[in-house]
Length: 100
Ligand SMILES: [Zn+2]
Image (cartoon, rainbow, N blue to C red; front, side, top):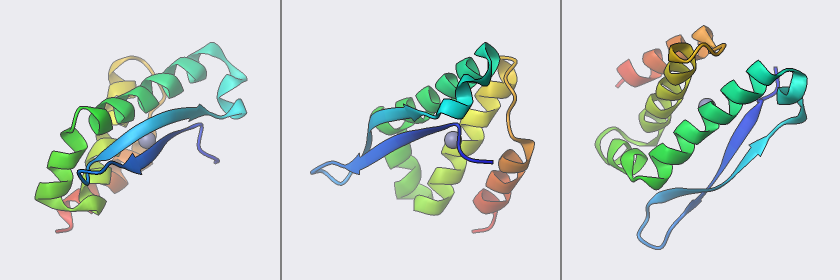
């Protein structure tokens, strides 16, 4: 399944990872529920990158595990708010995080 949304990143002059834009795929427009869940999911990523949370995770755990944390938390947010999280992606993120 193609991604419904994507958060576009860049590395700032201090080496921090920041989000500049969010892309919402046309396929997310299939219904209001999917659109809302997709926007919320990507806003979670946006917040983790621009608040510096991702930088802290990357510093402690490295980029692969930091990305897994961000993905898990964004899907978890969807689950909390009645979205349709990918449980496969959540499980895969947990596996990546635990596989030091
Ligand atoms: Zn995501």
